[in-house]
Each structure stands twice: as structure tokens, then as C-alpha cells.
Amino acid sequence: MSKPQGASMYESAKKIYPREITGRFASLSKLATIVLLGLFYLVPWLQWDGHQAILFDLPARKFYLLGLTLWPQDFPYLALLLIIAALSLFFFTALAGRLWCGFACPQTVWTEAFIWMEQFTEGTRSQRMKLDKAPWSWDKLRRKGSKQFLWITFSMWTGFTFVGYFTPVRELGLDILAFDVGGWTLFWGLFYGFATYGNAGYMREQVCKYMCPYARFQSAMFDKDTLIISYDEARGEPRGSRKRSEDPKEKGLGDCIDCQLCVQVCPTGIDIRDGLQYECIACAACIDACDSIMDKMNYPRGLVRYTTEHSLKHETVRVLRPRTLVYATLLLVLIGLLITSMATRTPVILDVIRDRNTLYRELPDGVIENIYTLKIINQSNHARTFAVSVSGVDGIELDGIGDEVAVDGGDVLSVPVRARAPRDNAYGIMDIHFQVKALDDEGVAVSEDSRFLGPTP
Ligand code: SF4
Ligand code: SF4
Image (cartoon, rainbow, N blue to C red):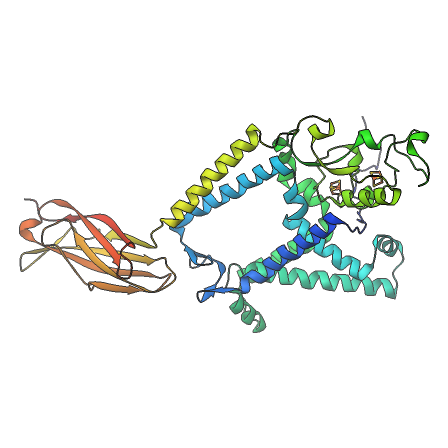
């Protein structure tokens, strides 16, 4: 089919003006937004054991999670945590559909906050539509200007908070006040702030429709027993307007009065009556809208409701089914694995690096000497004193390090040591074992093997 001359191949996105709505799910959504955003902005300011409670200190390669300090060596825990998060998403999607999208996704939560600011400065849906169509005036400038001020301030604060998860937030605040911020810090703060401004202020539902991969593959996790938001077609059709006093049955109508309220409140601009659509983020605004109409008409609530495909067809709904059971079992096993491995984790790491420049040295008093560098990493949050020893060759001793060494919490001690053994016991290549043991807790001990070289027999 040929394209008419001058016609565009693309349909430009129409701006959506979601209508404000009250109801059970709107209250839940507000609560989720306040709690989640509250946590995001508050958490970096919390302290734990003298350090920021949650801090991903990339330059120092340390992650602080409350009382836990994770090092690069602990990467498997982080990987396990991410796998658990992904599997939880699969599990809850199979069980309850796109609950995450509707109430907890950052895009939804920030968009909600931006819409509040928009309503505060520009008014209700119809006022906003009228304002956009109106020519520029002092009032329009004042309203649009106030909205931009709130959006930009909020976005900048969001960028600052985001960077505050990677750089100690209190120092960052002081640096900003002193106009002394590093280039990368500035870049990431502005980048995240700008992304928030663009995604929550302008892109909104288009992020969910066109950019979010989850929206594309979540349908693969759905089955006929997954909780979805759906319009009860059998009850609602044929739709049509009527007076409140009229009996719909006499007019041959279903319960849908075709008021369009469910469409007007939809943040993605779809009509739930057209069936399950990938654009639906399950925010439940259409449930609140339709329930309010049903109340006005004195009809039972639930024409649009949380339900399942099986339930709509009056078939048996199974919560426990192979898919959910497999996800739940895997989830339990992985959570168990994570808890066990974290509980049994030794908060000290020992690295032994043998000096490769010299094989061995023979001292005048008949002693063979090998040189090593010991790296003791104290992963706990408090200073510890460790006893350091070596074994594996009769009479072997350490020189260059005392019997005990103190290492600060979360610190690395790197110290060169000399292992010495009598010549008569030190021929050829021998395995030796270094051990580091905390004096305040016998359970905190770690050992590392190395080689001790001597002359050929
Ligand atoms: S159809 Fe309903 S639940 Fe889905 S996005 Fe629109 S308002 Fe939210
Ligand atoms: S809000 Fe309810 S009654 Fe009104 S159009 Fe939507 S489904 Fe029909």
C-alpha cells in the first residue's frame, strides 16, 4: 500500500490526562507511593554502627547493608539476591498479575508523585485540558512555571539522593554547599534527576508501553488462574446509558452504563472493556471508577474487578498449580541457601601472595627464608585483633609480624612477612598453612595454603 504524499508513518502520542479518582485502590496506591518514596529519600540519611546504613561504596569496593559489609569476594551473595528478586517477581506475577507494575514500580510511583504536583499547580483533569488549549497568559505562565519549579526541584533532590547511595550523603551535601563536587558525581546526579523528570513528567505511560521489557514478557507468566483486572463482559453487556430509575433488564441492557469513567481514569489511556491488554499496568484505578458508578446506580460492585479467567467463566480457580509450586519451591530453596551461607560466613578473609622474585634465601645461621605478603581483610564492622601463625614444616616461624595484629573494622591489612624454617627440615617444595584467628571469637578463623621452597636435597 503506498503512503499518501506528505503523510507521516508514525502516529504521534496523544497526551493522556488521567482523571483523579478516590477509592480503596487509590488509597492503597497513595500509601504505597508515600511509603516507597519516603524510604528512598530517607534511607541514605540513616546511620548504622557509625557508617551510612545502606551505602554502595564503589571506590572502596564495599557495600554496607545495615550491619553487614559486603566485599567483592561476597559477589555470589549479591548474585543470589538478584536471582531471588527476579524469581519473586515471576512468582508474584504468576499469582497476582502485574501487582508490581501497578503499585511498586519506580516508574508508577514517581509518575504518581509528578501527577500530584501537576494537579496541585494546574488543577483537575478538565482544568488541565483547558489550560493546555488556552493561549499563553499570566495565569498559564504562573501555573506551568510553578509545576516546572516543583518538578525540577524534586528531580534534582532525587538525583542527589540516588548518588547518596553511592557516596556518603552527608559529605555529598556539604560538598554541594561548598560547590566542590566531582565530575562523575555531578554527572550521575544530573543524569538520574533528568531521567526522573523526563520519565515521570513526560514519558509516563510510554515507558510502560514501549520501553519496559517486563511488560512484554509478563504475559508468558500468566495463565488462566492468574489474578487480573478484568471487565465482566457477561454482566456488563450490552452496554448503554439509562436513567437510574430504569430497570436495565427491561431495556435489554447489561450493567455497564457506558459512562467512560474507567477510560478517563486510566493512566495508560486504554479501555478495560476491550479485554486484557499488555498496556494495562494493573493500577486498579478503573475498579475504583466503576465501583463508584455502580454505587451511584445501586448496582452491585465488581463489574470491573480483580478476578481470573477461570473465575470469569465460572470454572474452578487453582492457586496451587505446577507453575506456582515450582516458583515457590525454588524461591524457598534459594532463600534458605542465602540465609545459611550468610549465617555461616566468616567475617575475615586471608590472602597469601608468595614473593615470586626470590625462590628462597639461605641465612648464615642455617635457616631457610621465604617471603610472602599477607592480606587480612576484617569484614566485620568493629576492630579485631588476630593471632597469625604458620604450620606445615617442623620449626617454621614467622618474622616481620607480631603474634597478634589489630585490624580496624572493614579494613584491609597488607603486611610482608618472612617464614623461616631450619635448613634440615626445609628441602624441596613443601605445603604450608597460614592461619588467622580472631582473639575475641574462636569461630572467626581462616586459613590459606601456600608453598615453602628450600634447597634440593
Ligand atoms: S485498564 Fe485499569 S488497571 Fe489497567 S492501567 Fe488502565 S486503569 Fe489501570
Ligand atoms: S466505569 Fe463501569 S459503567 Fe462506566 S463505562 Fe466503565 S465499565 Fe461501564
